[in-house]
Image 1 (spheres, each protein chain N blue to C red):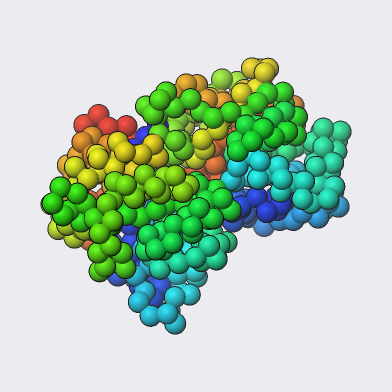
Image 2 (spheres, rainbow over the protein chains, first blue to last red):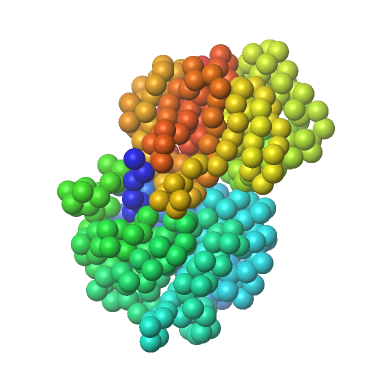
Length: 251
Length: 208
């Protein structure tokens, strides 16, 4: 039976982890490689890096991080943030990323999704959808949530599937950072709209939220950042909890 | 010993390279090449494959003499070869992804889209699934039945002779996820991304 995936996400800025696990025995708490290794040893089903490096001159730091991590972690590694072109994707894959998530570029130029999924295969193309509720629909935001495009996220999700995306990473901008739980309605609506797997993101504060994302939101995978940081919960605890509630997970 | 990972522009193979290098640990030489002479003289060959069946077959054909060299290695000389994902699928006579495409024809059968039962099952089949070992395979030494492996694919290999099947996985139906025919091995899942269990399979192949 296919298991639901737990994906810890690390925010990386200028090659350093911004929010990470705060374990006393960590030699270097800011080292993304060391943090990723802790997650994969702890049973994470995949690892996600979100590169939030703002300045262009430090952009290349992520390639070094990905290269080092992929030599230590033997679970899938997804990298997103600032991915603009087929060439960016090529570079990340060559450094050892298994999947690349595309956000702003997918909205501005869906052709990037078409071309990259043709060139590298749909399996490594994740489209990240940042959506915010407005009236009875959810609108797509780009540029790290700063720009409202007015595009309906359900229609966009379907379009991305048709363009060749292998998965959708759906983040509720309303919930992101709040720790009050995923936007279940958004997740379940997008999940039933498309036939590709949906990864739920944004708002996890408790282990129950992970359960809700899978059970009520119909997500194939749940991504979380804060809950795993500072040792609040380990990936292992999350899995044991979900298992006890009847969710199929890899233990 | 030389183990060659065939580099034929079949998409992203860096994870395959990393995992083999990790396992080989300087005791075994891991070569990444499309050089026909190096392939011929190596002890074992790994045939990765990402993207579509057609794009991988086209990429093999694009390198002059590569298919002949692989035939000689695996069929005439019967040296160990491991196909991963589309690398395994290409063992078939024919694949139906994008358009009907002839495969290597090493193991009779076809590659068709997984029946998703009208949307009941999401495709691609992405994530960790358990393998049901149905026959003793040398690459499954010390691998427990029902171990988890990482999958990502939308098409499945359906071999004519069921005796080649060494493991299946349950997704919509019993999908063939591992085959062994004499010196030819293949996994639909990605051992290079399947954590310690996956690395053990790679270790088993290297130590054949």
